Length: 345
Image (cartoon, rainbow, N blue to C red):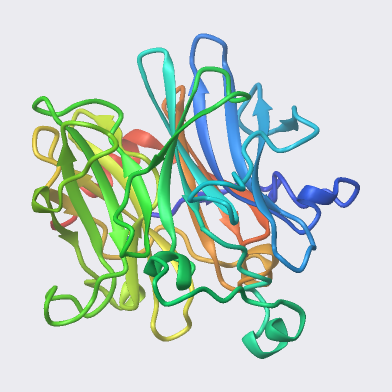
C-alpha cells in the first residue's frame, strides 16, 4: 500500500505578504532547522516581489511548535550580491548544522531573469536581456544557475563562501550530508547533464564526496538515481537534506511526470557508511499537488519540499506550493522508515 504524507489542515502556513513589497508576489520553497534545546523551528524561505526583474531573496520566520510561523525580520536576511557570481536572484535555501555553524546552500544567478513564470514572448516585451561580448564566460552569457554556500550562527548575518558547483552546468537541488562519512563530506546534486555521453535520458540525482566543502572533484561524483517510475519520468532531484536513521539516510526527492508535468515527492534510504548505495526507494509518490494553492500558482502543479525536521518522532516536511506559498505535511518518522524497508532499492 502506498505511503502518504499528511497535509496540514491549516495550509498554507505562509503566503505572500501584500504589505511588504519584497515578499508580495511569492513566499515559498523553505529550508528549515529544529533546535531541540530551544524548541524552535527556524525557516528560511524564498520570497519575490512584483518587479519586472523578478527579484528573489531569502526571508526568515520562526515557530514554537512547527505549525505556526512568525516573520522575524522586516527585510530579507540574504539578498543578491551586486558584484559577485550571485548578482541576480538567489533562492531555495537548504539548511544543515555542523558544530556551532549552520550551512545554507542556495541557488544563485549571475543576472536578473525577468518574470520567468510568464510566457517568454510577453516577458521579452517588458524585460531587456543584457548582451555580452563573445569573450565573456559562458555562464554569464546564458545566465547559468549555480549553487552557493553561506555560513551563519544566527540566521541574520552570513559568510558567503562562494559557489560549490561547476560553472558549466545548471546545477541545483543540492543537499549536503550533516556529518562526514568515512572522513569525507558528501552531497547530492542534480546537474542538467543528459545525453549519450552521460548515459542519461533526463536530469538525475548525483552523489559525490570531497575533502573540502568548496571543492567537489568530478571524478568523485557519480549518478545515484535516475527516473525509474512513470510519475518521475521527466526528471528527478533531491529535496531535503539527509536525515540519519538507524536504517539509513532518509532523503525526500521529487519526480516530474512527463504526462502532466506535476511535481511529486518520493523517499529513499541510502547506506549509512556508503551513501552511493540506495537501500530502499518508494515506487509510488508520497505527496502530489491536490490543493488549489499547489495546483495553481506561478507554476502549476508543484509540491516541492526543501526542509524536513523531526519533532518528538514526527517528521515535519515544509514545501513550496505552486511556487507561491509554503505548505506543511507530516508523518510518523518510524512509519515512513518501516514502509521504506518494504520497498525495493
